[in-house]
Amino acid sequence: MRLRHSRALTVITAVTLAASAWAGAAASAAPRAGGVIPAQVYAPYFEAYMQNNSISAVAAKSGAKYLTLAFIQTAQKGSCTATWNGDAAQPVSGGHYLAEINALRATGGNVIPSFGGAGADGTGTEIADSCPDVSKIAAVYESLVRIYHVTRLDMDVEGRSLNDTAGITRRNRAIAMAQAWAATRGINLQVDFTIPVEPYGLDPNGLNVLSNAIAHGVHIDVVNIMVFDYYETHEGRVDMPAAAESAALNLHNQLAGILPSDTAGELWRMEGMTLLPGVDDRGRIETTWLSGAATIMRFAQREHMSLLSIWAIQRDHGGCPGVADSNICSGVRQSDWAFSHLLEGFTA
Image (cartoon, rainbow, N blue to C red; front, side, top):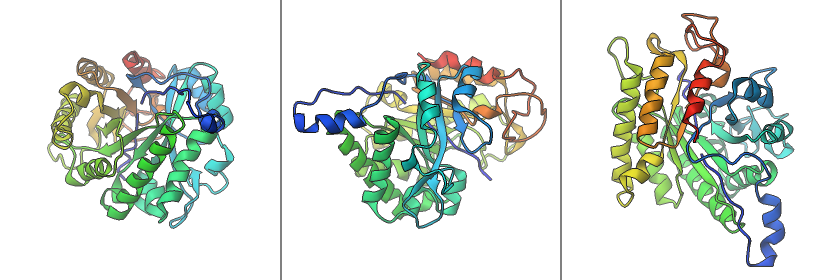
């Protein structure tokens, strides 16, 4: 199972609307007080489906103020009702996790809700794959702004979703509708795309997700590549920092091809990377050590990339040396929260 989830960000400013007719709607949808997500940020994934994990408590213990919340999906294929973790008892419309999110905001932090993930993308429960109605998908995106007062969403597109042409088009049409809806209310709704990558860059299906988005009028804020689980890399032990840098450089060239009017600096600011701390699905041949994470961060800082993340913050612990892709530890010897304490230095 290719657990490549990810995601990314910045914030937004509520604008005073000239037309008083919009004032009430804008006030209800505008972001509430909390931490503005910086233009350059470390925002690790938080596995919301893990039991007995508090968003605010993990943030306080780890020091990570900005979290990417994984995942939103439907409870069953064919549904248009968005839920947290595919749990019908946790509908997005019910405000699940809102109290925890507000507790985080009270400390100056904030969140980026993430749609999809490997599980949803493999079962057809990613909202755009599941729901045939574009307007209903857009309404779900808008509900995150209205109910949760967020201004940035992450679209984790992997697995079967990468080849679901109808789902890709529905998703991008819905994002464009939601961004236009937000703009009329003075809100800049940012959208990140988290996509698998290889050292040579995106595969054609991943690049198509982005090209399709541009064709449908989506403003892409960040392309967040998952720099782990390189299943098309067949040699022995992988140099993870070198592979990540190669992937980012090749993505940059690919972005230049689909966004020819953007400058090199603008394209670098569109890029983000998600690491898997420690041992990933492929075992010891793909291990990201703390020293490797530091090398990757220096590269991202030098190129002025906008996002670094890890999959996932609950794994940022030692205690299980040699274990591959655990949900609760990294598989390498480390102190608790060592990767987060390092990568928090990326936030500026």
